[in-house]
Amino acid sequence: MKFTTLYEAAKQDPTSADFGELRQAWIESQELERAPQANDQADGQADDQADDQVDDRADALQTAMDASDHAKVAALATEMIEAEPISIRLHLLAATAFELSGNAPSSEMHKEIARGLIRSILESGDGQSFETAFHVVSVEEEYAIISLFGGEPKEQTLQEHEGHAYDVITIESEDGAETGEIFFNVDLLVEEDGDCCGNEGCCGGH
Image (cartoon, rainbow, N blue to C red):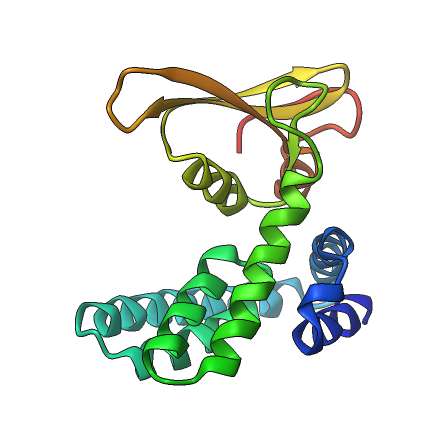
């Protein structure tokens, strides 16, 4: 699988990886997994079980974080990354947990992957207009960028512009004195969710 090859290479040498290509390959791999299968009922049950496992791990992760059990946080974050390998939040969490538990090499690897993922988004535009919107593949990526700018999201609208889908998010400075907008191209995201009609415009929210 293309994504697996790219991801393993990124883990070995994150400073040389093309994280834009990696993120695109992840979306393509998810589309293949969602292709119609012969036994849809069995697939639906498997998806439900997988969702339950994700919820259980998220609960366990929060418990470990509350207890400042850094080794447990690192282990759980690593497990969750197997299912969400381009999650900026999880890589940053793993980086911090490994650092606090004394595993510097693992901490640095996850830190560099998170940096690479963020950098690939920032290189896609400046977020100031439809034409120069940041290209994202998940809602989490949107909030990672908003957090990077130090803003607080106040309003979000899904808009169509020249056949493409955009999230336009109004953000407010921490002191509430200033507001602004950040534009995100979400073509890949809404297509993944089944909420966009190709290049004919957006068909609904996500």
